[in-house]
Image (cartoon, rainbow, N blue to C red):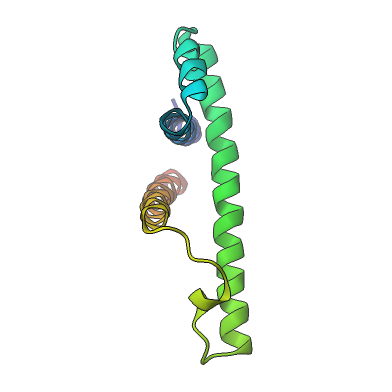
Amino acid sequence: MNTEEILQTAQKGFHITLGATATLIESLQDAQKREENAAKLRQDWQTLSEELALKGRTTEQEARVFVDSIMNRQSQSSSTSPNTSSTASGPAAPPEVQQDIQSLTEQLASLRQELERLRNERSSN
C-alpha cells in the first residue's frame, strides 16, 4: 500500500466518521430518522460505508461553505467598520451549536494537519 492509498483511506475514513456523526445527530433529533437509520444498519458494510462516506463528503463541503461564509463576513465587517463587533452582524447561534461547531472545526483542523503530515512524509520518500 503506497502513501497515496493511505491518504485516500484516511480521507474515506474521515468521511465515514463524519457521515456517521451526522447520521447520529439526525437520529437524536428525529424519531422517524432514527427508524430509517436503524434499518440502514442492517445493510452490508460496503453499502453502509459508501453511504456514510457520501454523507460525510457532503457534510464536509457544507461545513467548508459555512466556515468560509463566516470568515468572509468577518473580514468584510472588519474592513468596513473596524469598531463594530462581528457578532452583532447576524443572529447568534445557541451556545450548544457554537460548541459543536467549534469542536468539529478543531477536529477538521487536526485531521487536515495529519493529512498534511502524511503528504509531506510521502513527498520526502
